[in-house]
Every structure is written in C-alpha cells, then in structure tokens.
Length: 103
Image 1 (cartoon, rainbow, N blue to C red):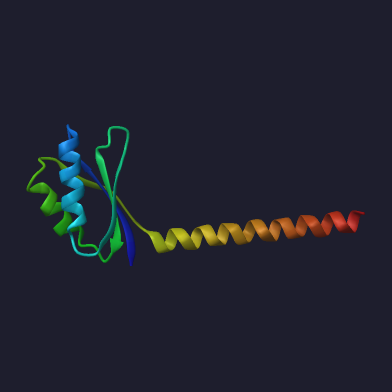
Image 2 (image 1 turned 135 degrees about the vertical axis):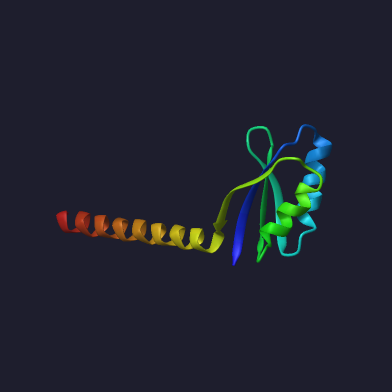
C-alpha cells in the first residue's frame, strides 16, 4: 500500500533539515521525501510499505521532538479523485442532453 506519512520535527537550521531528509530517504520502502509546513518543520515521506516505527526511531536518534500527525493511503485518495471526476462528467452529459432537448 502506497502511503504518505507526514512527520513533524523540531528543526532550526537548514543543516538539520538536510539531515532529516537524508535519514528519511534511507529507510526501506521510501520513494520520495520533501519538506512541508510553514517553517519547513514537517517531513513528508511517500513510499510503499514504509515502517513508520523504524522511520520515527531513526529520526528520534538525531532530533528531540518527533511526532507523526498524519498518515494517508494514496490509493484511496486517487480513487476518490477518479469518482469525483466521473460524477462531474456525468453531470456535464446530463446538462448537455437537457440543453439539446430544450433547443
């Protein structure tokens, strides 16, 4: 299952941010790593079958405060987007049929 895990860390400098990204990228199963948040204090990790506990423990060795605020399955999010797009298409088709019938 492909997941997106957001981890909040206490990072003060760019060197700390780079170190956090490097540590997160080395965990097995991780496909992409990025910084998020207003202060770039969150690390967003995307991957398949990523062990969250292992990831948090690796980061906790270097950073004092590590929390995992969100974990979401990307497959479900993609399915929801597809359903919404299909509904929009159906509505558009209905409107077109109604307009054709009115003319």
